[in-house]
Length: 159
Image (tube, rainbow, N blue to C red; front, side):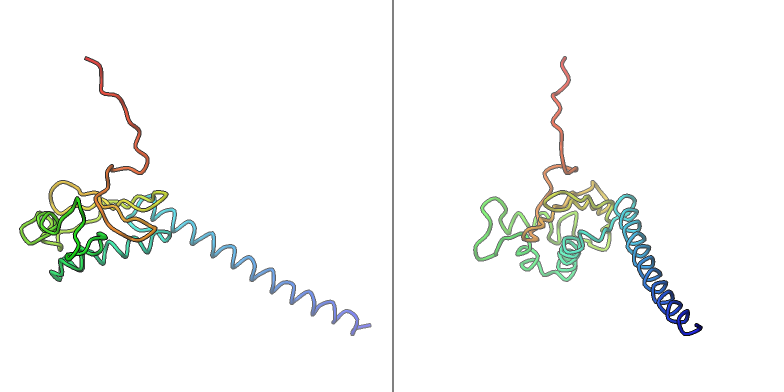
């Protein structure tokens, strides 16, 4: 009779282990989700936009190393075949040694906004904040046309 009950007790112990591991996995996923939500809401980092944020940090690292042509390529442009609306000369005015963004050590990321097709990084170099757009599809950089993801046009106030 003791053998009969020992078989049931062994099955019950393994079931308890499975339930315990399932609960641990659920708690870990919930904790990661909560951390990501807090960082997205109140911080400047979130896990879902890691590639885009890495690309922006790589861009600033290239600027700090004075590799301007490589940084220009991250904008989807090539010094040999420059972009139609953003020449290398204009890029150097915006990001080169004489620009307000010349001292990359002053760079401070205020916010990272997740959008459907990319991110907007709000960056401050000690002056006016700059909105940098990183496209998710091909990780190219540009200036964000708006400071928010879904702008709502409002008519000017009537006189």
